[in-house]
Image (cartoon, rainbow over all chains, first blue to last red):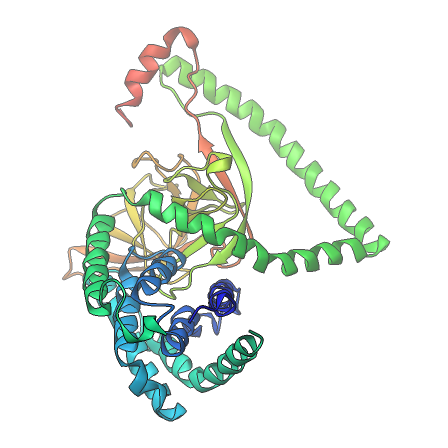
Length: 162
Length: 294
C-alpha cells in the first residue's frame, strides 16, 4: 500500500502533537498535560503498522527526552516498548471496544511513566508527591476514545481522496 | 499488498531489542558525560521552529496590545520610567565612585577582580514539562555565544545556569531544581555554605550549617563564586527559617530565592569577564586568581 497522503498525515500529526507538548499552559494544569506524542504514535501503530514502527517510536521518544530535558533514552525506552507491543498485537487491539482500548492505553502509559520515574529516582532526583507525576496517565487514557475517533475520521478523509 | 503479508527487513522484535539496547546505551553515556550534546542539539534544532510557532500568537497579542495602548498610558509609563531612570542614574554616580575606590584599594592589595560583564536579555520560551524539574527554555543559543554553564540572572538575583545549548535556544536549570547546588555566602557574617534546590519554586535549602553558626533569619545570601561558575556578590536567597535541633549536628535552614523564578518572562545572560586591573601586573593577577580567597 503506497499512499504518500497518509504518510504526510502521520508526519503532520506528529508535528501537531509536538506543538501540543510545547504549548504553554496555566501553572495549575501544566503538570497534568498528557503525553500527546505517545498517544498519536499509538493511534498510528494501530492504524498503519506497516508504515510506522519501532524506529519511529525511538525517534519521537528521543524528541520527548529533549523536551523534558531528561536523560536521552529515558522516555524513548517506554515508547519503543509500547511500539513493539502495538505493532505485534495491532490486530487484536484494533477490534476492541474503545473503552477497553483506553484501559490498555492507560496501563501502557503508566508503564512508560513508571520507567521514567524509576530511572529518575534511581539517580536521586525526586521529591514531592507521586500523584502529580502520574496524573498525565489518567488524562491520557481518558482522552483516548476522542482522539481515536478524531484521528480515524481524519485518516478516512485523507485516504478517500486517493 | 506484499508488505503486509511478508516481513520486509528485520522483525519488530529484533528492532525492539536493538532500540532498547540503544536506549540503555544512550542513557548510560548521557548520565556520565556530555558526548551526546550534539544529538541533543540536533533534535532541539529541529523542534525550535515549533517553539517559535507556538510563541507567535502570544507575541502577536502583546505586540498588538502595545500598538493599541492609549496615548495616556504611554505618557504615564514614560513619566514613571523617566523617574526610575533618574533615580538609577543618581545611584549609579555613587556606584561609579565606589567602584573606582574599590578598584584603587584592590590595586593596592594587588588582587584582581572581575569588573565588567557582558550581558544579553533573553526571553522565556517554554517551561519544563516535568513538574519536578525546575527548567526553562530561553530564546538565545549558540548563535549568541551562549555556553553550557553560563549564569542566568534577573533584576532580583541569580536564577540559574545554562545546561544545554541549541542553535537558537538553550535550556536553563534554575537554582531551585533538586539537582542544583550553588555556593553562597552570608552578606552579613561571611559564612560560606551551599544552597541546594528543593524542587519547589520558592525554596532553597542551605546545607551543612552547624547549630552554632552565625546565621539569622532574614540574612541575605550572596553568590561566593567558589565554584568558579557564578559571578561573585549577586544576591541569591534570603534565609526564611532556621531550625536548630540540639541532637543533630547541623541545623535545617531554608531560604527563599530573591529572583522570582516562576514569574520572570525575561532573563539576563551574563558573560563573566575577568579583567586585570593593571596590564603590567597581569601575570601576577592571573597567578593569584588561581588561589581564591587567599
